[in-house]
Image (cartoon, rainbow, N blue to C red):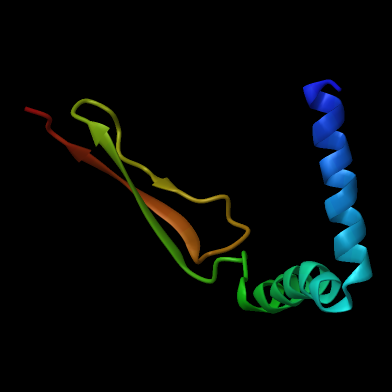
Length: 83
């Protein structure tokens, strides 16, 4: 038998064992589903306030950057000499 065929047969055997055992099947499917739901409520990807400062090298003009859509999401540009 080839190595790939043996690996496929082993994977099939293990899959059948998992399907037969209800406790293992519940853990294989239930634990990731529970984590997905809990972490989905815990993680929020919308920033409320975000302060960003951009540093420009000497000679560049400093300016305030904002797209105007959200006043909390703005950045400051500073002219700082580099040595």
